[in-house]
Length: 283
Image (cartoon, rainbow, N blue to C red):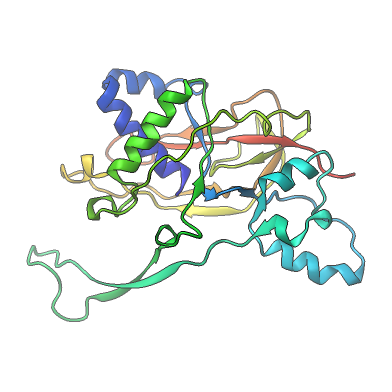
């Protein structure tokens, strides 16, 4: 579950519920927009990217192994965020990305309007099936907003009922909201650095001394426009992955709402704002 895709689908739900004018006003107010995380394995956060620290040779292999693990537990982050040092992480504090991908065979569509290609059109597509496994299907989603919790839950629950992502029309991407709570512990810290839970862009005016990994995103329009004859492909953008860290220059917001991402529809946007948690690196 990726935050920018989730945000786009929430925009359509808001348009249905409140009207197009209300959606346009919401998108024009960066302070009011939702900051969204990705969906993380339940109880875990992205591992913060931090400066390399001097290490004894005996500890190198363990640190290399730890860096392959993408997530740290929420409890470990709270325990260590006064002086974050990856050398203090225990094995049970970390987790790898669940490997639940399956190869699905598909066939190319015949662009002449004659169904699928008869020969030479087969290709393999990797799909994430973690939701089919009881051990990996539960996710935590974080939303930063001034809106009431009950309203946020209603939007996310309705999206889960309709289906998330490109497989929604096939009955995929369905979920139920098991619990929605106000998060008080994670944002309550005076630390000088921030851990981003989001896919976003770096804004040098508000974010300094950043450490990040970047991933390309080639988004597509939802069926509301693509089935109406609009070209489905957005322009590709490069976003930081969850786990990026930075020093804030001011109170935020951090990142930007990206415009001009579709060649035909100027109202199409990508939410590249950061939901960021305070912490402090060890000296």
